[in-house]
Image (tube, rainbow, N blue to C red):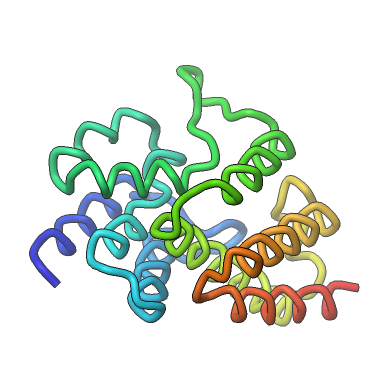
Length: 187
């Protein structure tokens, strides 16, 4: 990797400083690093891996990061990050309601390019694996962490698996398998 990759890790760490994974003490930065590793595993190029490191920066940090991302990494990386973003907070720090954002994102996934799909799919795979691990460790209480609860979370991940499968994204099989395990354990 080039120095751009290290620079992207630094930006992601700064943007996510003090954040932890939902319902855990695990530093949030571990998630974008894991997503970047999955993007590399499934054949993504350096821009896609950098976008994976930055995929939640706009969503969690806000649009003020857009100029910095574009200046440091270029328009393609910024477009990839935007393509993975399912809603930025408004000027008051508020996002649209969960169901509205997720339905819009599912529609978006049916239309975006393959390069964005790989990054988004690896993000969803990483999230699904984390939910599965926590479900195995703490049981159904894991769903209390999520706005949509058990039913909404399972619905969303089933829809994601369906769309990524239909689009034949390289990580689709792994996501489908993980979602299947989630559904079996959660019922």
